[in-house]
Image 1 (cartoon, rainbow, N blue to C red):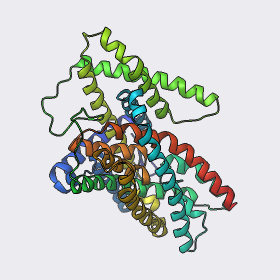
Image 2: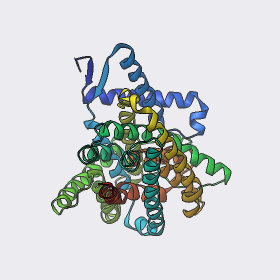
Image 3: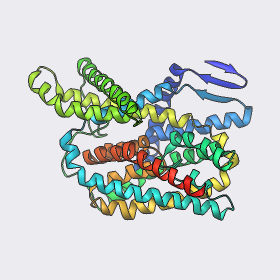
Image 4: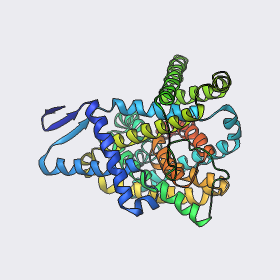
Amino acid sequence: MEFIDNTLALQSFFTVTLAILVLFIGKGLNLRFAVLRNFNIPEPVVGGLLFSILFAIVHFSVGISVEFDLQARDIMLVYFFTTIGLSSNIMDLIKGGKPLIILLAATIFYMIIQNIVGISVASLFGLEPVVGMLGGTVSLIGGHGTAIAWAPTFVEKFGIHNAMEMAIACATFGLILASLMGGPIASYLIKKHDLKPEQSEELDVGVSYDEENIQIDYFSFLHAILVIHFSIIIGYFLNESLEEAGLKLPLFVTCLFAGIIISSFITPKAEKRFKWLDWHARRTAMALIADISLGIFLSMSLMSMQLWVIVDLAGPILAIITTQLVVAAAITLFVIFKIMGRTYDAAVICSGFGGISLGSTATAMANMTAVTQRYGASHLAFLIVPLVCAFFVDLVNVVLIQTLIGYFS
């Protein structure tokens, strides 16, 4: 922990510790206020937003800023998506083939709409149309990572000197709204259409709020950790090989695929050969590790938002983001739910789509986790949403952004 030039820098240990505290405070607030539970607002979102606002108040009142070492956050993201892969298998992937293609096509259509909306609203404010791209898929579907990666291009090609600040501001507002939108939409659809899971199954992430007497011994927990680490090692070498071949993907994507490979081809044989292992307990441990890693990741992401950086850009950006919110909610309610089959799975997918439409893949997963912990499992949603959001969308977004930049150049 260091205090230099009115900036308090917290190292990784303190950052993770604070993130855990933030998570507990979010849980406490959810227990205290029924409205948060009824709208399925994820606990790390509640705590993370509260602390980011408190840090902003400290900055404006006494001029002290807080910065965090977020290296552990990236590790948590890899852990989380590896557990999702290990909870799936090739047969699930085949089963999800048609819904995956439908959701992917709808998402690509929405991405085009999102850029059109951003460009249109920017033009109405008298800004250069290309500025609207910063309030489109560059920062919303793309998230902070894509925003940071592409902002220098807007500075060089179009002379938008505050492109980085605008992109980060849009991504930040989008992340907040995405965290608050997906859960209420799913809750509304589930209650309106009286939807229920087709069968009672174990959750992909975490455990049900109704479940009691959960038993996990240290061996099943370490077994889950070992399998996760083994998958990450395979995912790392797969990522390196793909990068050498010219295809650069986030590490968590290749780790997800490594998890699917292990659960499809290695785990079934191991279950038959090593019957002395409690495989059911390992699956429960895996779900809890997924819950922990996602919660800490999202807590760290939201509590570390520097809201004071985006205050000066609030006017036009709020107009763009508000319009994007209305469009995203309308498409989720009236298009995504319908084309995905009007089922319980479709409602959970809508909560995930609400997360990715304005936020990030992790936000989508947090929204779906909050919904399924209350209403029941949806393996289909947890299979196809991360594949669409974390893999295909990034590839499509690169093509869209490059095409639009070429058009306005």
